[in-house]
Amino acid sequence: MKHYEVEILDAKTREKLCFLDKVEPHATIAEIKNLFTKSQGKSLKDEDVLQKLPVGTTATLYFRDLGAQISWVTVFLTEYTGPLFIYLLFYFRVPFIYGHKYDFTSSRHTVVHLACICHSFHYVKRLLETLFVHRFSHGTMPLRNIFKNCTYYWGFAAWMAYYINHPLYTPPTYGAQQVKLALAIFVICQLGNFSIHMALRDLRPAGSKTRKIPYPTKNPFTWLFLLVSCPNYTYEMGSWIGFAIMTQCLPVALFSLAGFIQMTIWAKGKHRSYLKEFRDYPPLRMPIIPFLL
Image 1 (tube, rainbow, N blue to C red):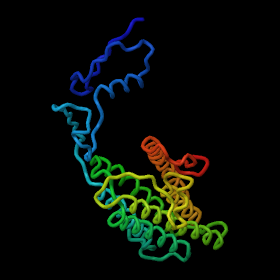
Image 2 (image 1 turned 60 degrees about the vertical axis):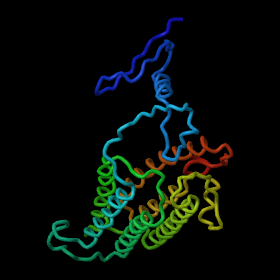
Image 3 (image 1 turned 90 degrees about the vertical axis):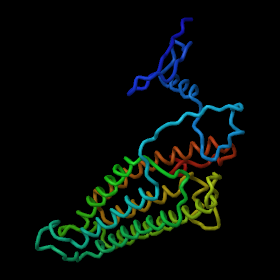
Image 4 (image 1 turned 135 degrees about the vertical axis):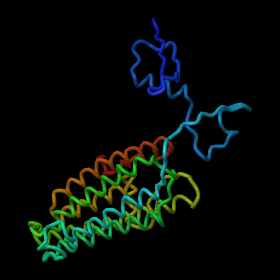
């Protein structure tokens, strides 16, 4: 059978990165990518010990420039502080938003004030968790991510706040009953999300990058670990569904949908990582939605 020789070059510099010989004619691009990855070796973690690596007394390491980096803490603080203050600008109806006659006026609808409390509580909670709860396995991320993340969070916050705090905003169809149900969903899911974050924090000692299988604790909110790998995302999604029901606002629903799609991607990645790393990983768990997804 005739085999192909494949040369892989850097797209920018045209420098040869790899030469693959005896590539089968029916090989897919994905298979070629795998061959290229194997030929380049594996990426190393900060905690890898040199004598445990598959090298002799002489080791060759390759450096990859990841570009400008920024700490995760800085990114989180920036992307969460924005929505908190942006929403309040609309809530207090500062000038040049709704027209002069509405400057610094207040809505007569209770749900508007309740929504502001819930939204503010959510982002204050996130900021405090970033400072005092979360332990990051990676110290930095690409600098460009802060612009992308802030555009997403700040933009949606402004869009939601504009309509919820608008002078012509109308309360939910089913009134107080709908608001109370939604508030209960929001509060329960916020408590659940915080409980999962605390459980994950206790799983990893300070200064350590050790990974363990998360299991339920005595806290009932953590029992969702029996069914999903990332219950923090499940509770986060539930919080925004509750907020959407409470406000009956389309931008909130769209933000919830966008968040669900992104968190599902993250959850699936985390779930695959658990399955790959731990042979005894609980088989009943799904990534984010029990029994479904």
